[in-house]
Length: 255
Ligand SMILES: [Zn+2]
Image 1 (cartoon, rainbow, N blue to C red):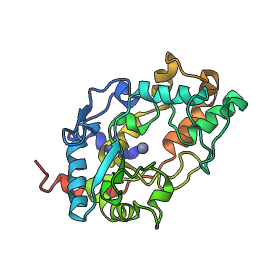
Image 2 (image 1 turned 120 degrees about the horizontal axis):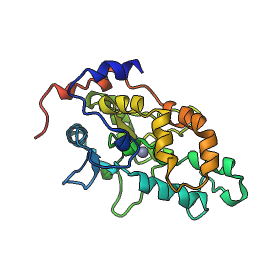
Image 3 (image 1 turned 90 degrees about the horizontal axis):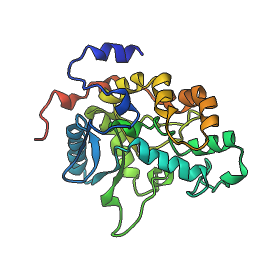
Image 4 (image 1 turned 90 degrees about the vertical axis):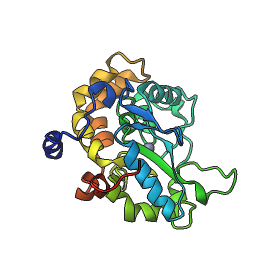
């Protein structure tokens, strides 16, 4: 990708190796002391700046899921494939996966779960967020589109992110339905690092990560891999110029 090639010459961008791209190592990850959230080391400060700015608007922006490794994604995948974990369709209704042939099962899983090795959460650049201030004590959340709808608890967070997240380098890769991953208004991505990561996560890199993994549905996954790669990895929103070169990176940053 042209954007990645041009940013390659930018020495400030810490690149991610094939093992890091596919979640098989975590050397690029740090744990934030204040929240326990795990992120790429170069994303920690931009995320803190985003949290601080949201706080000024009365929003307690909290990352509920940052880095996830390959093994974790694999256990989710295998559990769902075997019918040990719930699988939902696009409308949120349960799917009886045991009645589906392997290829259909793979497709059903991909609606709400990334293929191990193909999750943007492996990079540490992506984080699912909520507004804790919008939840009553003990109120649960599930990361559903309705929570971010106009009458949902996170409507204000969604609007604030629309207006502000790009100047901190964050954007939403899953903004609309492109036939692959469903819209995820809670999923933020740090563009200056995620854009080159996406360019580096080639089909051969993904295939290599899966080669020796004990993944359920292997044959169906391998047969559909080029299509999965196209629809579930590449079919995402492109970050804006502002998100790619956040204003805060040149301004005062929190210590
Ligand atoms: Zn996510």
